[in-house]
Amino acid sequence: MLLYKNEIQSTFEAVHETVEDIMDQLKLVEKLDRQYLLFRINFMLREVLNNAVEHGNEFNEEKLIYIEVSIEESLFITKVRDEGDGIHLEPTHEHNMDYILRERRRGITLVRQYQFELEVKHTELCVTLDLDSVVEEV
Amino acid sequence: MKKTLEDGILTLTLQEDLIATNVREYKSTVEKFLQDEMGNVDEVVLDLSTCENIDSVGVTFVVGVYKQATNDALGFRVTGSSDEIKQLFKLMKLDEIFEI
Image (cartoon, rainbow over all chains, first blue to last red; front, side, top):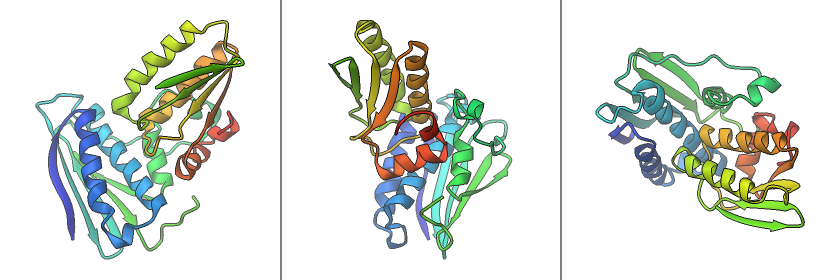
């Protein structure tokens, strides 16, 4: 079931408006009616869209970001595509002191810790969460 | 962002979410507040009680305020976080560095 589909400009403001729109839709979905789940999805959406703005399209407002959100059985699926040169995800990091206090690039590790699975196909990122196996304590 | 200073404790209360669109303004406001109150502050408290959502840019802002406070030999803690934001900070082990 497709829940949301749009193309947006490469700005943090557009990301914020888009995430607010998506969350308004998701709050109506019974399967997602858990506060911790909505918080994690909100965090993940901001992360992957901000990454597309900053690292994919490099804030070029002439380039667009395409987003699609759906639910297929127990899977919550988000697909994001940008017009950059290809997505390179950072590897998962251990939380040692240097990492904890680093300036940036910690978001994807957190998204993975929230049990989202990420798959990259050139400029498209597919993020999946199995709602049947997600646990509140991570 | 609202500030109060009482007994050397500078409390910074965010009035919007801690997300990328707001962080630039928060950063310059904190820098100004700390400059204005230099010498009068022993501890910086970041009050997140009205903050529902956060992103990694927001987390970076919190870490940045902690670093700035530490560099100035000031204490630092976060108050008022929702359960979800507390869990996020714990996931990052920030609770081992400052009080959340």
